[in-house]
Image 1 (cartoon, rainbow, N blue to C red):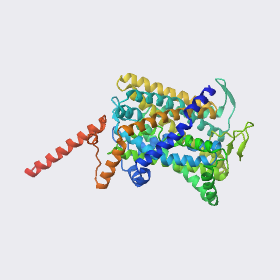
Image 2 (cartoon, one colour):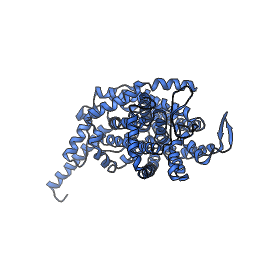
Image 3 (cartoon, rainbow, N blue to C red):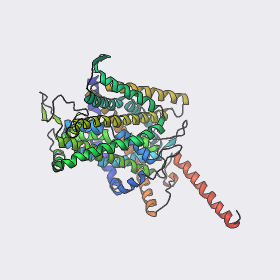
Image 4 (cartoon, rainbow, N blue to C red):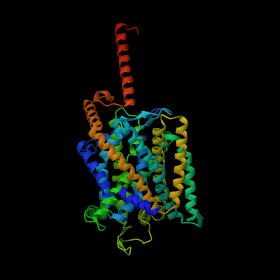
Length: 521
């Protein structure tokens, strides 16, 4: 099985996907005139202006749900792995894919808003790549293909990575405990305790739907991210004299990496995409659920989430690890020697260990425990986001079948995720990360190719950006969007909304006219 996983991983994560991710980000950055820079202030403003409704969540809640998917093991163990396999220069390529990927995140989130619809069963907003591939391209088969790939990736391939990280961090603090044999695997009793806690809490929340997930992540994500960044900043401030050296190591090693240029860029982009998910097609699902006045608004909010994930949280991890020197760089020599070895050779690279060691070297055992707690929240909220993505794609596949089919599909996905959480928690970290990479790569290939085709067919996202900027320049009090005005078809939610708004304006005009004719009214 491990050999098969490595074979598939090598095919999916060929250099072609690495350069497709970077190339798509650069292309969209140029075409949007670097919207991720020009409208940065607008991104911040939009975070706190949107409101939720009976059918949708607020922009901030949508950001929290998408950040729940972005801010996870990729930020703690993923950064450590990028450094451990690609050297400090890999961090530079994580920054590059985040900066360029912010424009890709804008595009995919805006598409999700344009082509979203109301769930025929729950009435909640649904949308994402499967929806916009069917509606924008008229290719239902491609939408179905992406939906199936998303369910496999988020329901089967990815949850185990997060669970494995939580359990590894827990064992780093509490110890392995008594060795026990579980289905042929030697597992410490403390790992089983951690796994039991995760499964119980996960089961309680995922049966509550998007509202419960959004409410949980709205509070958990900002708290855990800010606390984590604060402790990292303290380390940087107390070691301020090393900041230039850390920057020098990251930038200098990006092009002349000790582990080789290919290792730096390959691991940087791979772990960068895994972390910030720009272009992967996961973020649009939460973006579509937001209640906004104009599609571009949520696109801008989602672009900002890439900055939060990589430029803040991932950078915090990288600076801690490099500043404190708590990392090894794995070589490719036959004898397995490290290119750089600062900590014990037995330290697992694909785990939170490097980060825990960095925290512990400054904060003592508190740092070790804090990372374990942070990993729990980071990874747990990511599992919730994965479930929500799988839920949306089940809804897409069953929306015209029956309510019973929808219920059966959702129940099976819940069971699948919980089984894969258990499987991932009990297996080795390296093997589980390789399985997760298959899920990330599969979705990224389908989504990036699809949104590029949409761009050349219709360019709806550029049209939306120009329209939004024109209304913003005009100083409108309430933004509007009429898809027919721009020749955009198959956007049922916005078509119905525009008709309702026009009817309301007409009624308001009639009321004013009546009042003018007869003041007593």
